[in-house]
Image (cartoon, rainbow, N blue to C red; front, side):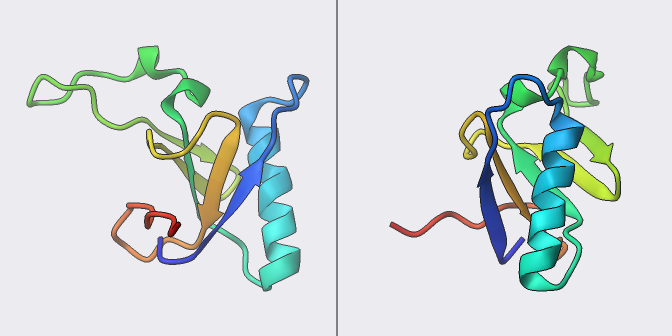
Length: 97
C-alpha cells in the first residue's frame, strides 16, 4: 500500500469488521475510492486459528471484512487501522517522522 489512512477506533462495543466498515466508508467519502486493504495489529485478529505454514512458522493471518482484505502487522498500533488501496506488495509503507 503506497498511500493509506490511519484510523483510530477503540470502541469496545464494535467488532473489528464494523470498525473496518466505518473506516472504509469514511475513506471512500474522503478520497473517492473504496479501500481494499487494511493492516491491523496482530492482537486485533484471533491468531490462534491460523494454521502452521510449510516452514514451521505461523503464516500472517488474513481476513476479509466486506471487500477489504485484513492483514496483521506489528507496525500498526493496537486500536488503529492502516487502510487504503492495495498496490500489490502487501506491505504498509513506513510513516515518516
